[in-house]
Length: 133
Image 1: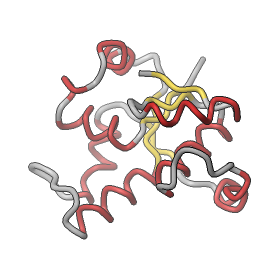
Image 2: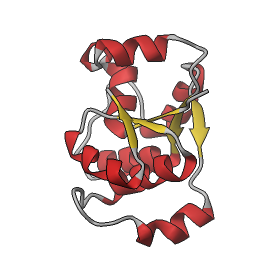
Image 3: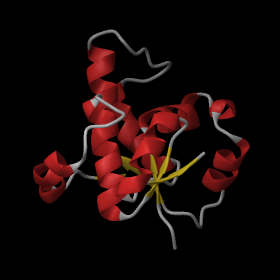
Image 4: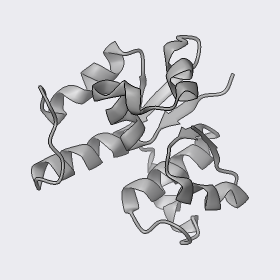
């Protein structure tokens, strides 16, 4: 069975504004049979951006998001040491954002489909990234 890794915006939208997700993404997330993951990289990105004022969460602090994710049926995905150490192998083409690039790398390494609206991720398909929106 295919597993799905939520990009940070996909995770936030699923929590706070699910209507922003595509209908296909909403349907996939509604099916409890689909294994859906949220990376610790996303929690780090959210916490960092909230801490510097680039992101405002409504009704919760970043600290609550892992529990919210689990309550929604998502699986938490830690960043493995070998993923961090081998990250240098991901070509620098479309994205400069280190959070996006690490999510791309995790999806490739774990053979997960990355749920993202970001069309720039498509350039990584040549490196075995699969995306869904």
